[in-house]
Image (cartoon, rainbow, N blue to C red; front, side):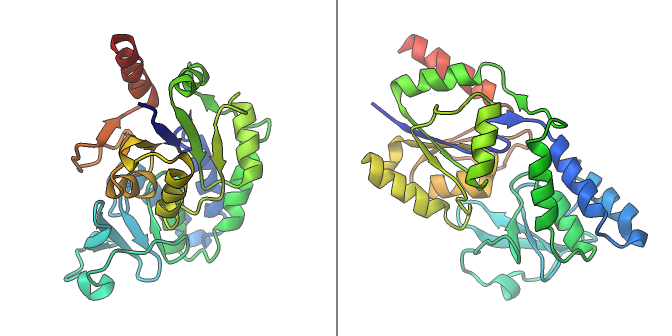
Amino acid sequence: MKNLYIFDLDGTLYEGTDHFDYYAELLMQDVPEENREAFWNDYEKMKAGEHPVAIGKAYDVENDLAVTVDPLTLKAVEAHKWNGEKVDAPERIYGEEQLVFDFKKLVAIGDGWWLPFASAKHYGVKDCYPRYLQTKEYMVSEEFTLEAISGLREFLLELRERHDIALMTNSDREDVLRLLGELELTGVFDHVITSAQKPARTKAFFEELQSIYKIPFGQMVSVGDNFINEIAPALLLGMKAVYISEHPHPTEHKDLYQVNKINDWTSSLRKSWQTS
């Protein structure tokens, strides 16, 4: 049975977090000087899981709230102020409907990019995007070294002999081509979707790929490090999902496989090939 594996790029096909700290350092320059120490301290607390804003939640920019989201309904279940104080009746703010995430007012904090963003917004930075672009430029410069994952290219080529593989990322086409070149993954994927605007358009792209490859959702597998962007939408459609994160998600689901590192999953899959 042939499956379609859909991979994220950033945080999934290469490792390392130095670029997140670089982004935070750039943003700190835009924070009022009297708040820079507090900005950095909060960012460090976020990384350590000691702050209301954390990976796996959402950040409401307008209301300055950390929002806990039910990953399988995408509804708000709790909200906390910056100081940790719990907000009573979050449904008064967010209603009973599925949350609609964007990149400005309500952001899904699925990976390390959004932690410095949230801290910067809290401390009054109006526009974070120019610093994001600067960080992307840094990532393709000689100053930055991507932490390539040992054996990943060989695994993907083996996987491609058995199944179809696609790439779907929020990065723009120019960045993706550069990153794939540095990772020696150029030409490896059957299908590449850039500027995907996940999570807003994740479901639509999954449905588009299902139509192109003409296979049931049950034979599609989403592989990524961002639960709200790549994992929850897949599970809601009846797909399988591989969540790669050192921050285990509390969700349990028959179609969900969680690992700390992508090589934990690739090793498991290779073993299944040997016994099949």
